[in-house]
Length: 116
Image 1 (cartoon, rainbow, N blue to C red):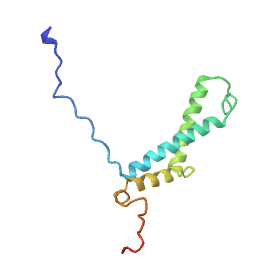
Image 2: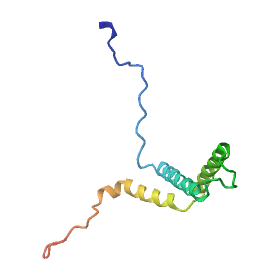
Image 3: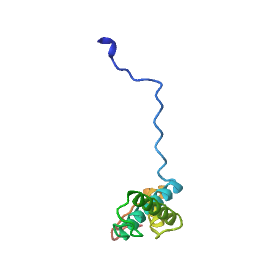
Image 4: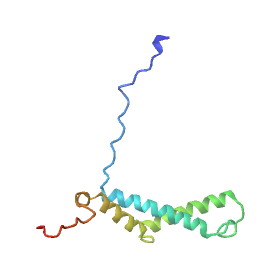
């Protein structure tokens, strides 16, 4: 039974490095994906449960409609959508910028009679 001990293997691949958090392209892509997800949910809630064309309770029709809604939402988000992706990306880029981290967010109060 002593031969059954588990030892870590040195041949295991290294986990991928954490992505750079301030990459504007990745931030914008993530914001577009979020907007596409939101648009998909809006499109799904916009039609009655019977389907867009009143197809009834057909599983294939529901699946095809779901794929179509998802593709439409992704295309809309890539073309500007409702502008949510741009607002999210701008906010995240601002938060991730190094200059933002160095400047205080609360203005300092000046003591009367002191020199600036």
